[in-house]
Amino acid sequence: MDLWTVASYAGMICLLVAYQRNHAGAWNASSRPYLLLNAVGAGLLAAYSVVIRQWAFVILEGFWAWIALADLSGIARKRPAA
Image (cartoon, rainbow, N blue to C red):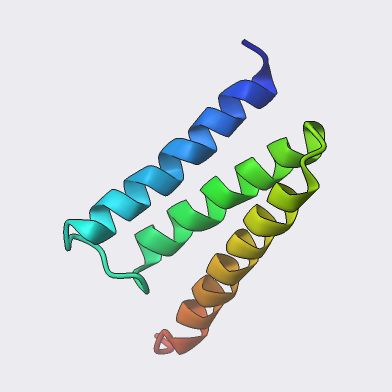
């Protein structure tokens, strides 16, 4: 199994764990762990999609990662100053 295949499985696991934790009520869709796993998982899958030249999935996963990162940066900006 090559490195890109391992990365794709890691990305898939990140997305599935985030979905399961959200569905179970442990994390809400705006929580930091949920968004972080979505960003990492979608980013890994977007990179793998480039490698295998599946352009529709590059767009899908890239957009998914971008949204999660944008939400994460919004959370960081909302944190009160110490």
